[in-house]
Structure formats: structure tokens, C-alpha cells
Image 1 (cartoon, one colour):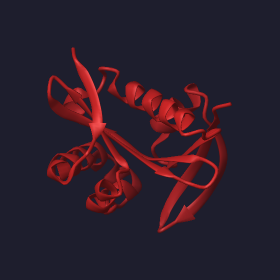
Image 2: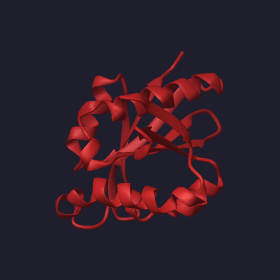
Image 3: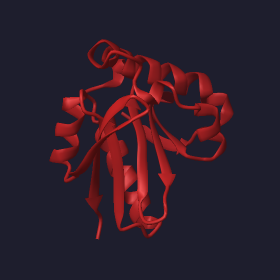
Amino acid sequence: MERTMRLATQADLPAVERIIEAAYSPYIARIGRKPGPMLDDHAASIRDRHVHLIELVGEIQGILVLIPEGDALLLDNIAIAPAAQGQGLGRSLLQAAESMARNASYRRIRLYTNEAMTENIALYTRRGYIETHRAEEKGLRRVYMEKDLS
């Protein structure tokens, strides 16, 4: 199936919010509150050109939020519409993030996830990310990870 990636526009905001809501809602019971990505200002992220979309046959099925930092690219959010999960879109977005980081001359890519999202931690570990530390921020227990791209 044809996959395309592009930057999000403000017209995409409803689809971005719908995907984030659907992808993260199952974690509310596990965490005891809404996960961080459900609380973010997605319009601002789109305005700042941080949100990339993956489309499958012309339909937005996933989002990737990348934020430049001083010495690394922060993979701030990755979410796939539940109906599109299991088709490799998440892997495609991770590969795209790493490629964009390299193309922008970053030597590392960083991310964080909630410690209750154990399947995400396992996925990132399989993809070569290592845990750097854990911390509580904004009432959320986060696991910080990074991958050396050099």
C-alpha cells in the first residue's frame, strides 16, 4: 500500500487530535490520568512545523512530532491510528525520525515515554535506544531514552 509522509498543516489538526486521542486513551486506566501527549498543544506543534504525518492510501494514519534541541532531536510523540496498527507504520515513522535527525546533523535522538507504557519501552529498546534515566515530571513517571546515530 502506498505510504506518504508530509508536514502537517492546521487543516490536519482534527485528524492529529483524533489519532492521539484514539492511540493514547487505552493508557488512561493504566496510568491513572491522561498521558502527556493528550495534553499537548497540537496546534502550536503544527504551527512550529514539528508534526509530520504518515498517510496510507491518502488517509492520515499516524503522526510524528520532532523537536530540535541543542545537541539532539527530540522524538516528542509518535502515534498510529488503532485501525492502522500492525502495518509497520510506527517502524516507518521511527526510521523517518532517525533519518531526519541524521540529515539535520544530529548525532543523537532522544525520547521519553511513560514507565507504564512497557510495550513502548521494549520497542524502543529493540530499535537500539538505551535508557538514560527516569524522572517524574508534570505528575507523570517518565523513562528517558536515546539512540546514538553516529
